[in-house]
Length: 309
Image (cartoon, rainbow, N blue to C red; front, side, top):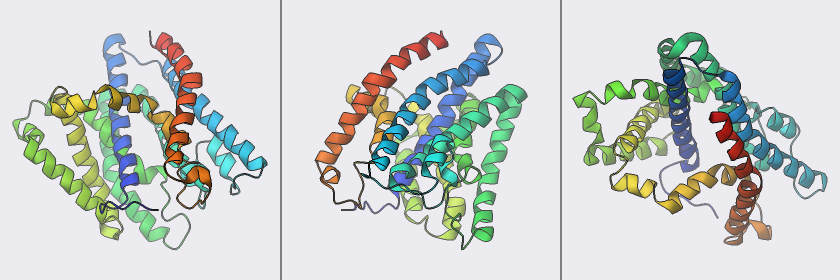
């Protein structure tokens, strides 16, 4: 059963939202450390990112490998290699159980490039790089449409085609304080405008199958998402902020990485297996995600906090 909400590929839209938020949060952390200490420790940054992401993702990859060797699931050639090297976004024809790792691959490539750019160039010049990436995004997507048309690489989420979503979050973190002093910008935070912007995102997303919209529509969505994310931070105590900070919602956020990794084997729309049928598929996905968080991720979070201190 496929759920259609009439707004296009809502799963991919969710990933775009995540990318903008990720760029925003990571850059805020870098700016905070730079402001307090006058520099950013790349060694500690990568140590914290390693502890947060690698153990859980490699645990998932190991489990998937064991299931494949046991003949329970099927993997395509190159799946495991691209999974362990975080290059799934460059792999055409990837299998279902590995396919979702394309977005984690994009994240890892972002973590590799952006902090180094920030440290080498400094906050101000790095923000110009982010602006350049935002402008280059539509060019990269147009180039893929022209030069990769008819190939298996045409619709892949290669880093140049999606990096502008991350860069939009990065730029927001840098110029957000200045924007908060602009009356014309704060008008977008009014409820009526925010609802209108949300409706515009859903409208654009519905028609991303068209070439012109797929090239430029993502850029518009990135800008609107940045405004809405900024509004959520600026008005963190209004009704929307209260909902986002509600404990059950916050816990879903805490569990989100585990759910992201482990939902794939259980939410396979094309499988007729018992574990993929509703509602037990949701039960299994949440249960395994909880186990991953409590047994693996949470203990490592304590070490991450010590590194941050």
